[in-house]
Amino acid sequence: MAESGTTRRALLGTALASPWLGGLTGVVAGWPRDLLARPELAIPERPSQALDVFQLKAVARQVLDQPTWHFVQNGADDGKTMHANRTAFDAWQIRARRLVDVSSTDMSLELFGDTLDNPILLAPVGNQLALHADGELASARAAGSRHVMICSTVTSYPIGEIAAAGGGPLWFQLYASPNEALMRHLIAAAESAGCRVLVLTVDSATRGNREGERWFAKQMDRSRSRLGNFEGYDGPKRIGNPAATWELVDWLRQNTQMRIVLKGIVTREDAVLSVERGADGIIVSNHGGRQEESGRGTLESLPEVLDGAGGRIPVLIDGGFRRGTDIYKALALGARAICIGRPYLWGLGAFGEDGVARTLALLRAELKRIMQLAGTPRLADIGPASLVRRGA
Ligand SMILES: Cc1cc2nc3c(=O)[nH]c(=O)nc-3n(C[C@H](O)[C@H](O)[C@H](O)COP(=O)(O)O)c2cc1C
Image (cartoon, rainbow, N blue to C red; front, side, top):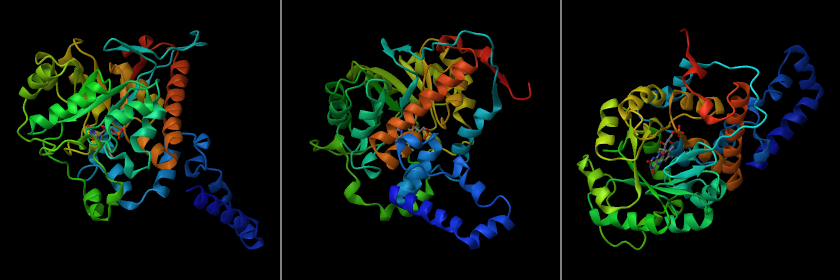
């Protein structure tokens, strides 16, 4: 990438220096010198140059092959749910308070008996080898001790290796399987890797319709596809179980000591059932708009899920978080913490471990900035009074 970015810049530089184009810019006022000055079009050559996660996305777009790019970017059907995840933030505006001492800020929080440095978690994402040779090892190293990383069932590297590489807090995400022995195998591996939280993904009764991913699937480089957690397991390896019901939560209770968090809850009814079935937490999620095309952003689902949970268990959220202000709005509405998916994949695809670290650093810095600018130096200061609905 760096090479092609450099070449592109060099070409533009040469073109601009030429008397022909120099004359042209005089004729077509404001182009292309102004174009070069627009940061949203810039392609950073080093992670430290990236000013926001969208610049890392631009690099990843250049680096990744078509199948991998579509694997990362696709939403279901027409992408309306994925889009709604982003536009939902615009329905809320921030009410900034003034003349508050914000000379020091504190983003730490308590979750499941642990103190976390900040409320930004890495959502579970499978097959990260497709994006970078170090895959989840790079993501775990970048997360370090500051961020919880939720490891997917279908990571390229086995959870034990990811735990050894990162050394920070890891949670394990489980997909339902009709094979109890397989789920036991995965749970045992997660427990021995030190995971204290199990995230059961409940939005995947079947696979969402991601057409770009399907279109390019045959071109996927199979040498960069691995299922680390299934290695050493000889039984049937079926993942996904359309017959799964709430009884699976009871089964998990009997088969692990880990806390149980349900990922993919989007309604009040299911939040109530989550509490009744003894779940320890909820992640409001629509899988990044990759499963059902509901047209509903997760931020729009959050209030009713919070209502159903009734403050009895913590509610987290993911889907479309790209800015510190997005995180701020979800926290103000009552989410305990948030998870990011694609933004750290962009960092990973663009620059490996350093790219993921840059994604996380940018989001932490942006959250800190809005906490200062809005006069809310601690997470506990952020609440309903921090927001107003657009047009209200
Ligand atoms: C490429 C990709 C792979 C994913 N794989 C998994 C997975 O294995 N398990 C899971 O529970 N969610 C998976 N997700 C969903 C994420 O955990 C998360 O819900 C979503 O990415 C959040 O939305 P965002 O990408 O807009 O931040 C995946 C998402 C992407 C983009």
